[in-house]
Amino acid sequence: MGGLAAGAVLLFSAPALAHVSVQPGEAEQGGYTTINFKVPNERDNASTVQLEVTFPADHPMTSVMPQPVPGWQVEITKAKLDKPLESHGKKITETVNKVTWTADKDGVEPGQFQQFPLSVGQLPENADHLVFKALQTYSNKEVVRWIEEPKEGAAEPDNPAPVLRLVAPADDGDGTSSDADTSDTTARVLGVVGIVAGVAGVAFGVFAGRRRSA
Image (tube, rainbow, N blue to C red; front, side, top):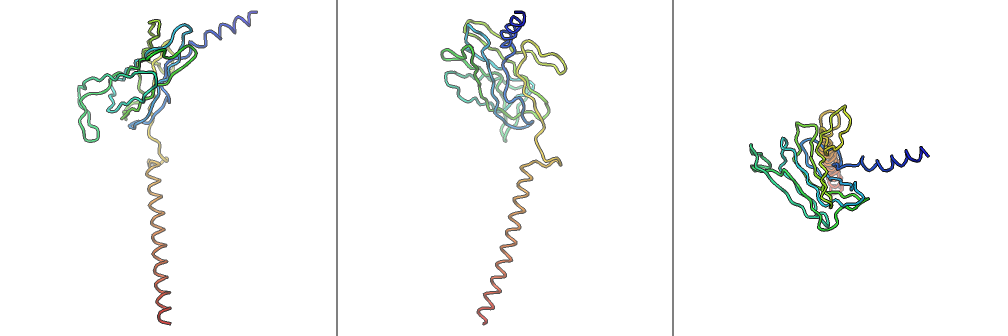
């Protein structure tokens, strides 16, 4: 009986482990990527009807584009930058500081989750992670604040904020990117093909000349 009761406690406490997160949890520094904010519904008697995500002010991004989510309206809020940014030859004076999704009707019902995709960039080159603070609003007016930044070596907080880890761009181990290596290989192959074609052309010319002389 005691074991059954303990199992029941674990069963009912498990949903509390779920929280708003960013997927995938890792991206390359200095690049552009698509991320999804995964929102599970943790309540049995209410639906999630709004998600508000705040972008880190210390690492502004020049491009934030939402992918349409059926049944949801999206609102992008921008803020003026203290120091303008340069992007593709253009001066950027404002950046996105908040994205809010609001359900048209029922939203994320009990026992379900929803993903909210964004294309973002340019990711910073001098940071190893980005923290996105999020507010999850339920149909019963309850607001859960996922705003606590997890600390390395410490226990996970009760309401952790979504964190995107940033890693160095992938290379082949000698500082050369895989794209550059592929381009170099392609150039070498084309060079060899050109040489072979040239030799074949010379040989054909010599052969044709001998036939005319005969």
